[in-house]
Length: 194
Image (cartoon, rainbow, N blue to C red; front, side, top):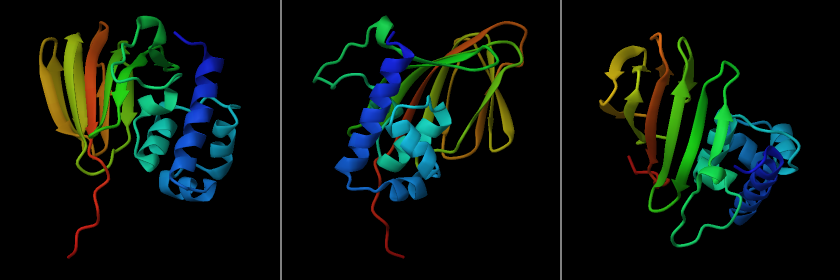
């Protein structure tokens, strides 16, 4: 796995490059993402390690995946992501989310491997309209809450839901929880006439 300094440098380069490619100013990106201009400057200069939520908001505003923002190198036609290159986001409470791979075309798609210990949870921000999430529980039992309604997903079960609503992944059991998740976000759509 690349070290934190290498990942921070890649994030800095990728955010700056994606913003420049779109001709966006820092102020425009701040307005679209809800991330302060000061935080964007810190990120683009590689002086901070942004959270998953911050990276998600920036990626959404730029129309790319989180995977594209944390990529250490260019993406070839076929890309094998080796275990040492998987980016891991560790939660203060002990759980972790591993971004296995991401793609930008034709839709934005990310594949994640999540682990949550007993009593841990993660609150997901709503994604853009039309986003779908698919999860498969590998171990334990997931309590998935979408728009305040809870659903239990056991090991070897799967679920698909609209990720454009507030949602929470929780481990309310006594043992470890592990699930894989795909997030599929449609490309930005043109405004529809009324």
